[in-house]
Image (tube, rainbow, N blue to C red; front, side, top):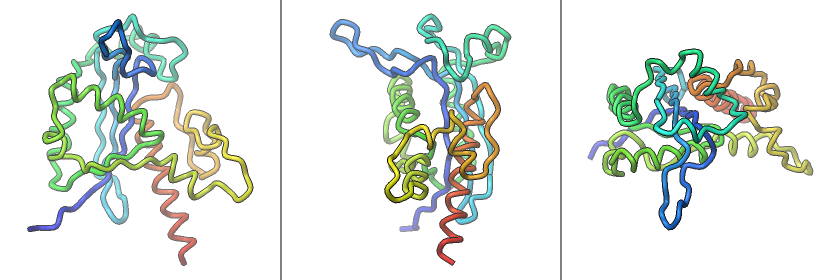
Length: 210
């Protein structure tokens, strides 16, 4: 049996809020929605960029969108950025078409990635995408660049402050010497920032090993 090989997929999503599910009566209802997916694919062991993916999605319930989102969806949608957006089902189909160009499986990676993957799991269920379907493209493990940064950068006897490792605050980018992403936040920019954070941490680790 041939040994499987892996490449990295740095993923970021934008949503209309923070709740992938909400209990309405006695029923769990998909609530806030994915409105944008961004991905940067990189090889191993040098982590050179292989490709980028970006797509916008029309939410079925835009009225549920909360205020003060860093992606500024209502304003950007009003200005026409979502005029060519597609359905969630179409977006995921295009994502898998994009991933299909590589034979290697993807290691899903992101910054504060638990948030993103929770929304993606709900989206997969809503679109009748099973684990067997996902296993064609993704390895079952997930990596989180925030956790990596905490492990590598939290100094002894220093109290952990989540804001110090936030992409939103820009503090983690500044600490690593990475240019802060432009505002408003987009999915592709978020994926790219996670990719840059990962690469910088790897560079620091490799230098410390010399």
